Structure formats: structure tokens, C-alpha cells
Image (cartoon, rainbow, N blue to C red):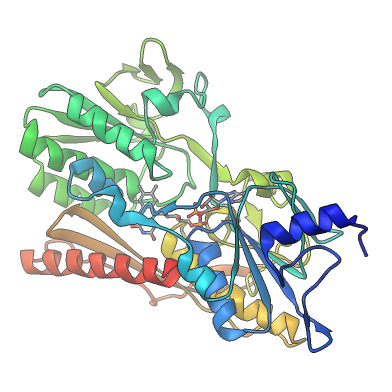
Length: 426
Ligand SMILES: Cc1cc2nc3c(=O)[nH]c(=O)nc-3n(C[C@H](O)[C@H](O)[C@H](O)COP(=O)(O)OP(=O)(O)OC[C@H]3O[C@@H](n4cnc5c(N)ncnc54)[C@H](O)[C@@H]3O)c2cc1C
């Protein structure tokens, strides 16, 4: 048992409330210690685990540690750029989690000790766990492009963590002259939300079409192919003819270095510049995953395909964007699907039972205009130790579909957003 003096104990109890998971003082139910699950990160992944643990295992103590009091969801935040949506419609708090009995702690986790099974926070708390879920999302790898640095957030907003940075990008588009060029850069793979940059280009073009019709969007892409390529190319040509140009890595899209002062993006085929630039940096697992040694050389966290338990540290599950989840893309829908699996796996482990066979799903809608959407669906299961796509289990919207199909898909997309945010935050 860890030694806390009286002052430390009272302080810790005051900050977490009675019945909390203070190290060495586990909650007691009828003389038996409750199992303690701590979740780091209250995004789509972490928040959904909290929900399902409270629902399926009311005797388990669940603590959700999230640095921010408000969460701004990224899905459909590209619509903020076109003016079709207010950021408030994507903003959630954690009141529903508190009401359900989760201990919500707004603090930043600064260290995890996988041996002592202890989490430390910036605010000075030390919280013990039996099982830990790490769901910190992404961090930006500013070292991946020469000349890049976090300063770029202010001048070339990535808007890849929705919130203030999204609003900054919107402001820059509003301030841009008609006839200007907006650049969207696409980083090395994998990154969160593979179709997101191409949806962004469409939403920017939508805004230009209505307000600055002589303006253009240029996509500078590190890669050679894009998610839902035929569908995007068809939509761009139909809705925004001549307004969007996509340059693949080999055709001048790969950015070799950035001159921040001159606003130059140096590619193999020469310099590019734009009136507005959304520079989306390369990505890796959230900092706390790296600091805990949960990542491998890919920068992401290897996990067991059945339980999403780290293959590096026992009793720690990593979900969402931070994990290396085989064939699953890094998306909110993947994070929520993984959260359901982890909640089951944890309940099984705490009851000494084997984890049930999981199946994972992902559905991703792209909105290129309010009445024009399309989607991709994937179903995944463990195969040969990896999370693999189930053959014939998914699908892609057809190209050349009539307008009513595109409109219906847009409506399904809006319903999807309602459902997935309700599952995580309401
Ligand atoms: C423009 C855009 C559009 C997108 N569109 C879609 C879409 O249409 N469909 C879809 O499925 N996905 C979409 N995504 C992807 C989706 O947003 C992410 O995949 C999803 O948010 C991942 O969830 P997560 O829980 O892993 O991480 P996050 O949602 O990023 O949550 C991580 C949380 O952990 C917290 N945190 C991190 N470190 C700490 C710490 N040390 N201590 C305490 N708290 C910490 C963070 O504050 C954050 O709240 C989009 C993304 C972008 C950028």
C-alpha cells in the first residue's frame, strides 16, 4: 500500500470526491474492493468505454480523465469552414457521464506507471487502476517536414483537432480575396480520418462557389491515392468544376520543406504558395502513449486484436486513433467500435473469463455539400493475430448515383453524427 499523509489524502479526496480511486484507498463495497478502471482521454474512444462500463458493470469504479471540460468533435467540422455549421453544434461536455456515475476528472495525465498501475496528473493526483484504457488521440509530428513547427498552427491552421483552430481557418477563408488560392496539405499515412482532407477541399469550394467564385482549392498530397477517390473526383467535377486541383506526391504534392516566413511549400516540382494554407501535419499517437512506452517505431501503439490490450504493457488497453488497429482506419466510428470491444474485454478480464470474440465496424460519411454525401463501410475481425477486414463485409457508395441517393446519403450522414456523438457523450 502506498503511504499518503493525512493532508495528501484529504486533498486527493476533495478533488475526486468520496468513493474515488485514490491509490491505496480503493472503494469498498460490502467489505470487498471494487475493481478500478481508469480511462485516459475523453474523446470518442474513451468516453464510449466509460459509457458501456457503467452500463454493463455497475460495480466497477470508472474514472475518466480528460484535460478539457468541453470536447469539440471533428466529424463534419469541415462544414464550419463552408459556413454550413456552427462549432457549437459539435461541442459536448461530460455531464451525462457524471450523472451515470463515472468519476470525471478534468486534468492532464502526465505519467503512467505500468508496473505500479498508477496514473499521475498535472494537478498532482495519483490514481490507481486495475485496468487502464489509454485513448489520447493523436499528437502532431512536426519533425516530419523540414521547417515545420507548432508555430504553423497560427499561420497555416491544420484544424485537425476541432475547435479554435477550425475557427481560425474559417476566418482566414472569410478574409481571403476572391480569386485567391486555398491550399490543403495531406500528410504521410496513416493519419486520422483518411477522407477528411478531400472533404475539406469540397467544403472550402462550397464556400467559394457562393461567396468567392473565382477562387480555387489546391490539394498537395503526400500520397498517391486517396480514400473514396472515384467518388470525390466525380463530386468535385460535378459540383465544383475547375475549382479543385489534386496533386499526388509524385506529381508535385509531396512537401519537402516549408519556409514559414515566405509562406512557401517546397515540393519536388517547385514552390507552392496560397492565400490560405491549411497545413495538416504528420501524426503519431498522443504524447502520453509515447511517454509511457506504448508505441513502437511506427509511432502508434501495437495492440492485441482480440482485446486491444497493449502488446507492450499488460492491463493497458489502447483504443482510437492512438492504436495500431490493423486494417481499421483512424476514425471516430472505429474508436467507438473499439470502445465497445474493450468494455466487454475488461468486464471479462475482471470476472476471470476469456474475452468474447469481437467484431469491429467502421462507417465513414463524406459530406461534399449539404445534399451530397457518400460513404464507406468496413467490418473487421481478428485474423492471424491482426485486425483484418472481413471479405465482402463492407462496401462503398456507387459512383454515378442519382441525386436522390446522394441526398439520402447526406441525411444518413447527419443521422450517423447524431448517433455517434450521443453514444459517446450523451
Ligand atoms: C476534419 C476531420 C473530420 C473528421 N471526420 C470524421 C468522420 O466523418 N467520421 C469519423 O468516424 N471520424 C472522423 N474524424 C476522425 C475522428 O475525429 C477521430 O478519429 C476521433 O476523434 C478519434 O477518437 P479518439 O478517442 O481516439 O481521440 P480524440 O477524439 O482526439 O480524443 C482524445 C482525447 O484525449 C484527451 N487527452 C489526450 N491526452 C491526454 C492526457 N495526457 N490527459 C488527459 N486527456 C488527454 C484529449 O484532450 C482528447 O479529448 C475526423 C477528423 C477530422 C480532423
